[in-house]
Length: 375
Ligand SMILES: Nc1ncnc2c1ncn2[C@@H]1O[C@H](COP(=O)(O)OP(=O)(O)O)[C@@H](O)[C@H]1O
Ligand SMILES: [Mg+2]
Image 1 (cartoon, rainbow, N blue to C red):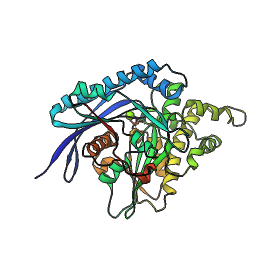
Image 2: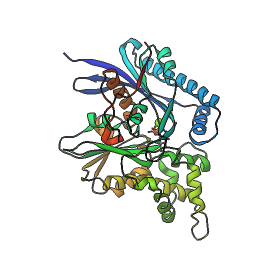
Image 3: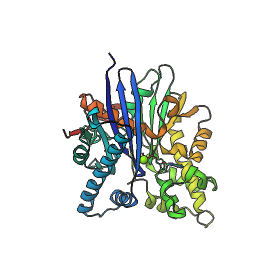
Image 4: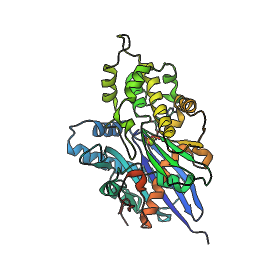
């Protein structure tokens, strides 16, 4: 008999643009997306999260209140999802809520490692009436891992091909890749900034939250000295396992690099900076793919960066010997892959199955990820 279970995944990444919610049907031979919903994050909460991620002195009350506000918002996203696809809470085995990362300090780079996600899961469990799995990253960190990226386990399960070496590239605020070689174990790591610097620069200079289609960046020209300066950040040279976040790649860092990079004593124009940031994202992804031990046959891209044509065309140029598609061609629209991954990770926790991949995160062992709240 076909055994089916329904899980919800809730995801908000480093871009802090929206809470993406996916109802994922899991059955013996795969997964099926039953419904999706995206709840934009109100400007004021977004600004709170940016302060909590980047400023060094923020009141503890501010952190606690934002934890509550985000718990309410994550609940709203789950409730709207259920009502939009006529699902009752009792049909849901569990909700996997990633939470909102406000700080990520992985081992290696930080002497005292931690990763902090907020969005109180007790509120989500109480308001939805569903069991909630949350706090996915810290068991991996407690086991010596980076706590990130966690999506490769899902990519491996859903996207692996028996005869072709696939790479899955997720371009969120930070970009990460999963390499699925045909006869070897999967590996994965963050490649560096995805959209985060592009969004921040765009907001600062033209006032919009993101560079629609990459059009503004496409009006500029890559400034090679600036690009080289940005690429000289030590993160790009670090071997995997590695992960990063807004605390490393933010506008303050970009400004410090720009201050050291006047070309012919003229500052680089804002649109040339934007073109250079898009090139930074695509080149560091392409370099990571070129540096893998075995050649990649095909690349599938997901995350909001798919909508930036400049990043995508740069990537195609850089990886001219590899077929580049989006995960839509593997059955999951690029927008929903990460949220679907956290629905799947909730299933792993509920079934007492490990969720991390030590080869990816560097953890000493496979562990159960997340705590269980509610019901
Ligand atoms: N139409 C678009 N044009 C260009 N970029 C876009 C567009 N839509 C979304 N994006 C980019 O995708 C980002 C959101 O991607 P997402 O995968 O949700 O990242 P995260 O996981 O960090 O939240 C936005 O902040 C923006 O940079
Ligand atoms: Mg997002």
